[in-house]
Image (cartoon, rainbow, N blue to C red; front, side, top):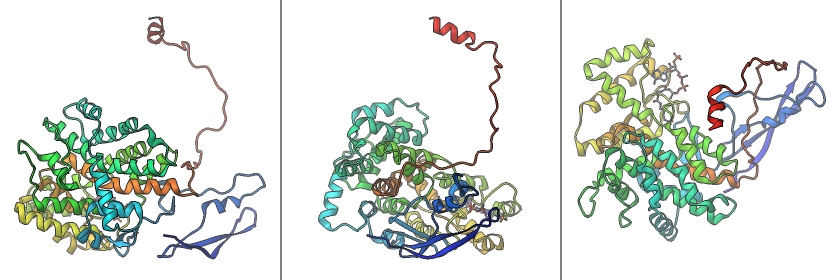
Length: 452
Ligand code: CMC
């Protein structure tokens, strides 16, 4: 797939310090006509020859494109999410998670033979080295499963040193296969460790999602029979979480990967970013909020508190990018109906439905374009499938590895990319002279330990 670039105009600038004028080309690119100027073009704006030139200042990258990508397209105002051009609604309804993972990585949907090879390759790499199992056993009984997943993903790099050869297409391919295959195994082992249950090894006769549920939930039965409603729910939720363009964790994977480290180390950085409550933890926060509300009769007071800025936010509502609706939320709502038809309605779901009904009719939320986001119902679905709250972010990571891997490889192959190295605006002290403030340069404890 090629994305055309053409300069369609120019931004004319005048520097009031020097009176000099500059012209910066405006590029229009891609099928949706995204316009941009190159930040480097602003470096010509300088007062004197030899001066560094004008920097752009953009904390949190609010208005900076860090890459060109052909993977995921989002239009937040229109509520559009597409992977490789395919609307998320169609993929969630018709595709499997591994089909979507193939699409993200290869750019096209697989033919049957291509899909068979992809699924077989992933299936036959689901086992982890026994030392990874021992490594996971070394964690404390109450370790957060995200800490375990993150560390074990980084540890995979020590088992596959050949993955460091990121210029070799075969090494890139097999590393991506290993990431997709082994993260569910590590995630399930982390779950079993925290629960104090024996680890269940992968069953390669099962589908990807069935096998994951088997590794999580199987007890003494010789063959695990997954609930088909849960298998479908997991597939759909994994598809919805598979990629979301340049979010915090994907940017972390790209930035760390830009040093040309192996992909396991880069994806471990993605896990670390996702672990943060501002990123992967919102579905957990929705459940905590609902249990604090406790009863439908407390909802009006809760909403009033949110509206008057009483320190609460309606978790699972609002999004930085989506300002009409989050297309994933509609799909999740429908899925929640199917799952709850199977497991039965509970008090928390009733609270969630009522919260949503009231908020969608309230001018505070309407005027601020606050709609339910993907996380409003995902936590409730995961909990109804008996996943503990701590585990929700792990489920997110197992799905997002498909996007991280595709984005990592796109970055490696992008000739324009270099090691990520933002500039800064220095606001610290000017030059000053060293003054010796210490009477003792090597304090006692240190000297003692050196003598030993
Ligand atoms: N409840 C109540 N008021 C809200 C909420 C909310 N959930 N979200 C935003 N607002 C208000 C906010 O107080 C502000 O009001 P005012 O203009 O009067 O000051 C206005 O809406 C704009 O808010 P903002 O903080 O400037 O919006 P943002 O784009 O920076 O924040 C957000 C986006 C997702 C962080 C925020 O909406 C939020 O905190 N939502 C709750 C947490 C949540 O559900 N996060 C999951 C996001 S989806 C997962 C993903 O894709 O990563």
